[in-house]
Image (cartoon, rainbow, N blue to C red; front, side, top):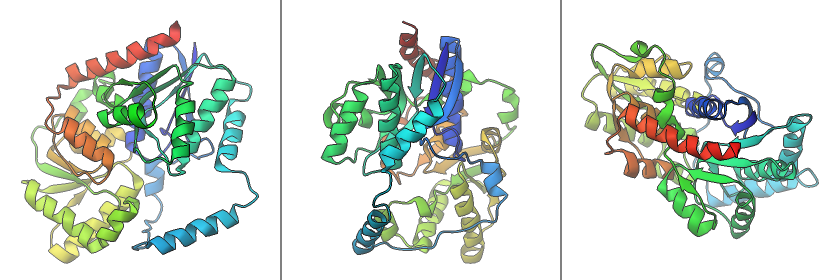
Length: 366
């Protein structure tokens, strides 16, 4: 059996890489299949955290974007793109080029926050992959995904039509269950994020992630550049760092270590580390992280984790590290409600999550 796996596992985001690794393990063990992975954004090139860190650190300028400036940018973009391929046309062409000469018994799209609107690249990616795979009569499984719930009426209609062509849909939080039911009018099942099964599936040299004692508390500073426009207009960069400093004072009882799971967060952590020295006369260690193994090793001597990155906290829950979720994005608010006070036993929870996904994938063999 040959299965196509489509997700964001080619990026420098370690959460996305963990999703790809876990989903690949589940697909191969459940279906005894050869797994071929392709990028969700079909014309996107791969990035690697270690390689990105080797470059000189660059920072995006701090700016507050007015509605007028946003409108001007939109008009300029429309003028420059006039007469060119639309994103949907370009993505469908890229998908066809990737699939040329290949055949698959089924395709798995997931996981991650892959269902988006507002002309986001993920919106066109989902429509393009489903359209081309459906043309080939390839069964489509959308697994472990979530949505940010912001769609125009046209996007709702197009997503409804596309998702209705899929054989199985499993979403990773209750907010997305409601979005699928009420906004997109599509039936779906529920299963927690697939990375909850990471430790249960990949128990290799567990001792490397076990420190003799907890000597640090950890902080994952979310990239200021990636904040929504609303939050950027609420906080200057200095105010944003003050917020994280107050969180450290409130929750950290041990020396603080700065962790990160993306290149943009690494850059922000570097700048925040310097800000702490200059403004607060505080020294914090900056972790050395190039991949998921490095992250777990650095996390192992931490008692708690303050973070606005979901997968950094999913790992923490599996390795008995307390979490303080900072709901900078809607999916973090949902995660906080569902998991902050949950009783997570890595073996039991991992086995349960693994079984739900295995059950969904077994339909591909029928």
